[in-house]
Image (cartoon, rainbow, N blue to C red; front, side, top):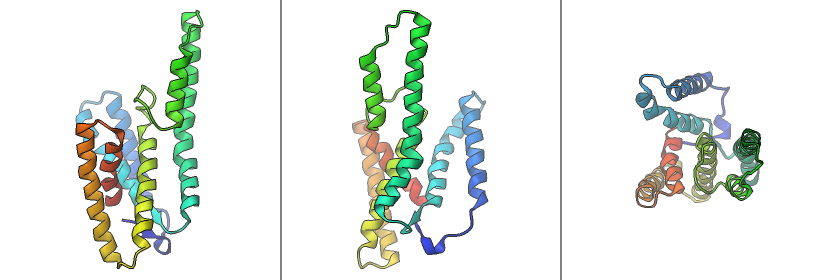
Length: 196
């Protein structure tokens, strides 16, 4: 649930601690920890819930909000993925000694990273959270701006927002099953953001 800028408090160190525990569990699970399936049940939802807890509505205009999210989410996503693709091509050249890099494929991969599109690759699967959170935050903020632009009370806005988010959750679930489309992930995780 969004917190207005007037309710802004001192930094909540519990969020930092939970984020740290989530990161440690994620690293341990990916490193082959015994109960990895248990960790996979909750570590990513935890990050979306914590991100929702950090969301503040109404303290800046939408254009400033988007610019901030581009700087904090899109640029790191873009940087990590572009460096990875360029380094992997250089390593391929040196490893094979032939210099036969598929530059068309490299171009397509870089274009997909820049446009947040295309198939999941070895790199983008590791950074999908940035991409998903970027769209979740933008869509969630748009939804709040739309609802707060009405004459509804805060209670009615909260109910309507929940109904819309549960509708998106259902639609995202159907889309993920029927179309295997990435937007299904985004719609499904928006409810986790709201929980925060």
